[in-house]
Image 1: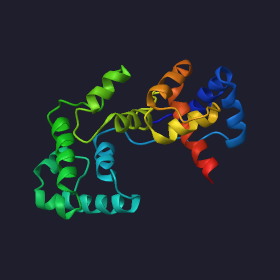
Image 2: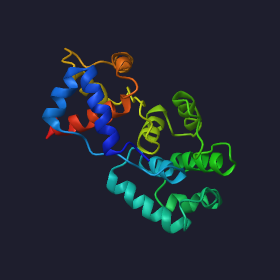
Image 3: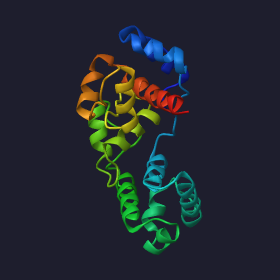
Image 4: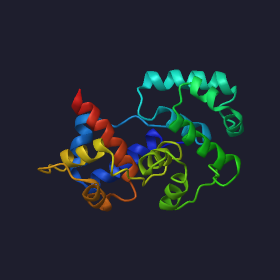
Length: 205
């Protein structure tokens, strides 16, 4: 499970001691709510289904997929489904390929989502074996489903923007700069990312 409210608060308080701008931003925006997802195959399958479509479209596809498979938590059900069944559920040919890649890796035991490597980079490498799961999706899974405290999705557009805003930079930093700027925030970068999304939303309102 993801980082709890207590873990987020403790990490953000630690960040505020390291980087005073966090204290000012927390006073302005408050502490974020936890972002928690279930660990496992089904969460990653939902990630694939939801890529590049609206929330409403993703929910509609998921409902159809549940009806087609009967059990979306069993990767063998997806492997046994025909291309026509997946297409009828709204999955494009590309998404069907991604879903089958995930299901195949899990069903074969090649990818064990209950025992991913403890090292974050090794865990990201294991997850990005799945077609359609890039570094960002792997990082989000590890942060929201496993609650790894130091995951830092530096390539996320909102994270880059908010790092620049919080630090008062004249221009938005790129991914490399965002990664470098957060080095001193270890081992609390996961909370920093969740706060960045929270601050982005609060400022945008």
